[in-house]
Image (tube, rainbow, N blue to C red; front, side):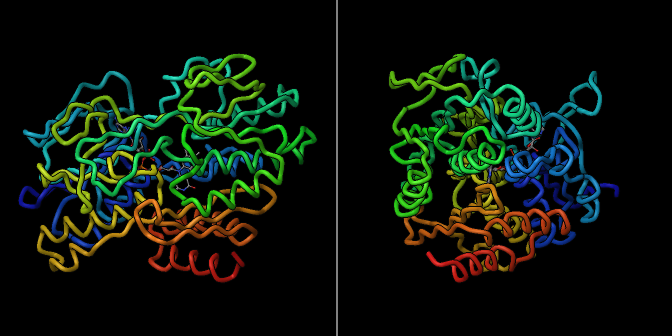
Length: 427
Ligand SMILES: Cc1cc2nc3c(=O)[nH]c(=O)nc-3n(C[C@H](O)[C@H](O)[C@H](O)COP(=O)(O)OP(=O)(O)OC[C@H]3O[C@@H](n4cnc5c(N)ncnc54)[C@H](O)[C@@H]3O)c2cc1C
């Protein structure tokens, strides 16, 4: 559809969970009061949280976890541009981009009335010495498939380490209530340890005793709350996993092991690593970013100095831990705020308070999963952990619902998941 010059122009930068979610929520709440354009370098959504489950169950996540973005957006009259974003000029209210369908395209500039920065973060594996030669991971299909090939063909049954590098969180503009996280997202290392142990058993290559889980922090997955982590560690310990905390960060990976920045090291034939979540280089130094490059917002996901600039998902400084579930909650906030500005929601509806929550379901292999629901990281009382078949079914069903409804998870989806896990499974 042709752009209207009379309507406010909303640019959403990034089209994965946060970008798609924000664009849909803006359309839902603001109706046709604005034009919306999503810009991403790729034309599909990558359903990252289920990549480990897919690969351990023998499916290629590149086949099963990509959802076409362009037709999904078109259904809501949202334009899509496939381009690499190379810069944002906050004062001029413009975005610079280079079309990414074919190499050789020149750079273009596009203006906005509102911009939503939903560009996620760089997973900085390339900052870890030895990762390319000796590291494995599961955050994209390439690496997940490479890892499963290694396990099937080369792994000799030796020690395995699974854990995270140190996360560098910014301080500038950070609210007092938000703690410092030493790892960006520790659901995945817990999930991968459990499901990898199951895979090793199934394939006659060992089990939990092969694996040591490490964390730079005092406690792994500390955003889940002390009570939850205590229960998780007790369960993991009884299964035979090793556990090492306070490693500070990763110094290097070598053929035979891993060295930590605190001077300790562990022998390891296989190293499964989650890196620092690092902001994209062009965000660092912008007047809306903290000293690291994450975008500063208030609880309405709006930059305090530039109210036309929003951020949500992993790119936002207040999204800690870097969890898709938190980004999902933030998309609703962005949609309401922009609709309020455009006169489509009352101020009470637009400014509805948001209370962040950690909701995380991780595969354990064998048709079981763990379910975490907590807000203690944000000062609340909730700390729920459940394990079993129901969370596994929820993890698979959530992805099915997401793809079937083209990203629009019904409003009852998450509350139903919470209710069923917390009431049907004994704590
Ligand atoms: C292995 C793993 C398992 C996980 N499991 C869970 C889980 O169970 N539950 C959960 O809630 N979270 C989970 N997470 C975290 C979750 O994946 C992220 O929080 C989520 O993907 C963040 O969404 P986002 O849209 O903010 O960023 P991203 O998903 O990173 O998307 C950013 C988008 O921006 C685009 N982009 C970036 N830079 C540019 C550029 N310069 N130009 C154009 N486009 C650009 C990218 O192509 C991408 O589409 C997991 C993460 C990992 C790695």
